[in-house]
Amino acid sequence: EQIGANVSHLSLRQARQHFPQFKFNYDDSILLDHTSGQIFAQKFIQRLWETLKRRSVQIHANERVLHIDTDKLEVRTQHRTMNADKIVVCAGPWTASLCPELQSHIQVVQQYVSYWQPPQNMPRFPVWVGLGYTHSENWYGLPQSQNEGFKIAKHRLIGSNDPINNTNLCPKTEIDAIRQWANEHLKFQLNNPINTETCLYSVTKTEDFIIKPMTDNSDIICAAGFSGHGFKFGPLIARYIAALVTEKNRPKWFDMAQSRWGSVLS
Image (cartoon, rainbow, N blue to C red; front, side):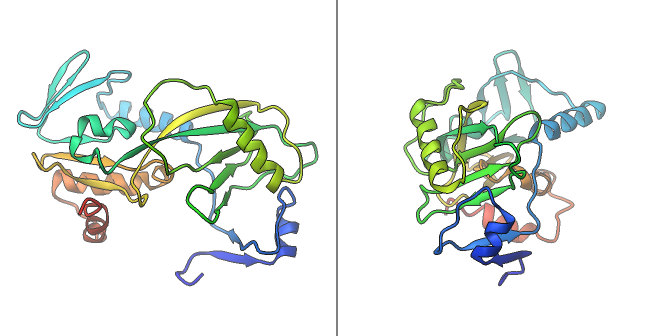
């Protein structure tokens, strides 16, 4: 409220009326965000893909990038070699292998996501975030949608760099941890999960984004650290990177963004 956010502070009684799915304690601070919502990422990406295709953008899907030659401005993949005037690297967990100078600033952390069937007659779950006393105690969830149950996951930012693998199995220890959290914070017992999945976060220590030219070649832009909350900033980030690449049509907020996103390494 102090910085102009459209939120309301709820009393314990109000919180229990608004969100009967949750257990609330007397020392909880509860905020209702009137601007919250849910983005269906898969649908969004599909529409973006279709739009790019209509505009004759070449998309090479499922094609691994093996090397970027910073001197020749050359990208080598498993199927072809491409040259360009400008290169933007936005490779998530694989960023460090393509932009080695970011290796000590980007951390890869495995995430475990679960989906559960709500009890009958239970009101629809909200979009929610539970902030703990430390960075290792943050949880979040989404309402049930698209034939899936409601989502519960831990927002993990701390830990050693996890290995990059393709497993989609959620270990029993992680399911047990989710059940333990639910027992403490939800008013009903969880049954077996409808589905579980894993993903890899690539984050900075402060959760700030990194968007800057490479030291070896300013025609290569490195963009990283978006996991967790970067998706909703997509249009803004795209405009900023486009302004960096073309060196024109810079929005009014360009300098402010550059001082924030381009200075994480300093």
